[in-house]
Structures are given as structure tokens and as C-alpha cells.
Image (cartoon, rainbow, N blue to C red; front, top):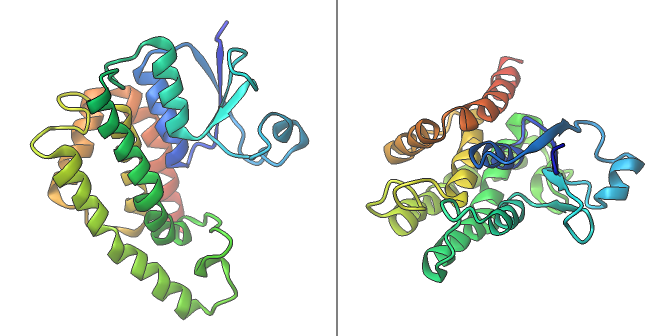
Length: 228
């Protein structure tokens, strides 16, 4: 019997991250699509954050854990998956930094730029969530699109340099998080720089079906909303 239960919403790149990781790491798990269920009393009893991805395992103090990066870090630590998350402090620090930079800087820009096109709810306190007129919301969205280029270049110049991946010669958990995130940019026909296109292709080639299967759900959803 699988010891890890993974709760997901398949069109999400945050969820794609852990879906890819668990497959690539060849861990024993079951996957449950909880679309439309995350505000139910049953789900909230396990995850009061109502967030996905969320894993459940009896080994955890509260039996559950959400946040994609935290899930990958935990499972690498527990199962000794040094190929994805090296134990040496210096390379690990770079992987941690890349993930925190993504979720703290890059992803907020990406969400503001893509969520309107994806029909995803935006965050309270931001222009897209407000009562602002359509023109004002679109101006804010375009500003977010323009802001994407700088952190993207930081990933190339600082975190990757002359390496194929943030993790060096093979993908790390930071690479899984970044490549998955980049998938959403197709929703706005964002022109990725050539290095980023090559990078995503290399990620999919390196991880095979572990990447392509979850990616197909995200890409399928993007194609669906663009067809409407």
C-alpha cells in the first residue's frame, strides 16, 4: 500500500511540480484529483490552508504537508534523494535560493500575467482582484508581463550559468519547479528566450514520461481556455 497520498488540481503548475517529482523520484504514491473539493469540511480538516498540492502520510507530525517546494525538500531528505537535492551545503543553498526566488519574485509576476487568461482567481489586494475597470486591470497585467524578463535572466545568468540545469548536469528540485512554472507562459503566448525553450526541452527529455504526463494536463488546460 502506498505510504504517500498526493492531492492535486491537475491544471496547476504548482501541482505539476510535485506530480513530476514523485514520478521522477519513483516514489510509491497514490494521486487524487481534488478539484472542487478543497473547501469541503473533509479537506479543510486535513489542510486548513485549502491548498494543493498536498501530501498525506502518517510520518508527518500533522499527517499532511502542502507547498510544492517544502514537499520536495521533505521527501528528498526522508528518502536520501541526493540526485535531486544534494546534501552538500553550497549546492543545496543554490537550489534553495533558486526556489525561494521563484516563489517570492518570479511567480507573483507570472500569476499576475497569466491568471486572467487561465480563468484562475487572483489574490486579494491586487489590481486583478479589485473593482478596477478592465483597462486598469489589463495595464497591470501587461506590467507584470514586462517584469518577467528580469528574473528569467537571473535564472540563466546566476543560477545556471554554463550548466544545463540549476542542479548541474541533471535536474534538481529547483529545475522541476522552474520548468513546470514556465509551462503557464504559453497561456499568454509569451516569447520565451531561446535558452529557456532549450531548457524546458532538456527537462522533458531528461525526465521523460515523469515530466510529459503531468505537463500534458497543464498544456491541455491551456489549449482548452485558449479555444474559448
